[in-house]
Image (cartoon, rainbow, N blue to C red):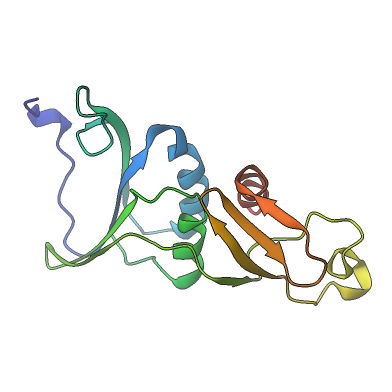
Length: 168
């Protein structure tokens, strides 16, 4: 498939590229990244770009690409992107127009202060424990499951997706 000149995304001098975001997860990643794009930061987001990597070998898949002219990636953002459960997502750090680091964000073994326990009886759900840090341990990567360290409640991918959107 030949790329048309008007489909090319502009190069960035310094910043980050979040690539290979499957089309069905693009809106969630957009909601996760949006609060990090503050005044003065230029971002270019393209949707439904043909992707051989996300295809089935016979047909191209579709992806979203985020190019952000600032290195906005911190541990919290990286963990939130990993929590989408998409192993194909790639983060590229760009310095002087060159990729200096390229990796797939990995699900953290432990999480604190990103997710909230959905069990209304959990000690962390009560107002008098509002300052209590929420802590979760990774139970499974396929499917993604995290468990609250306080009450044992398990969060599945659909729960995590809702919590990531609620956080915005």
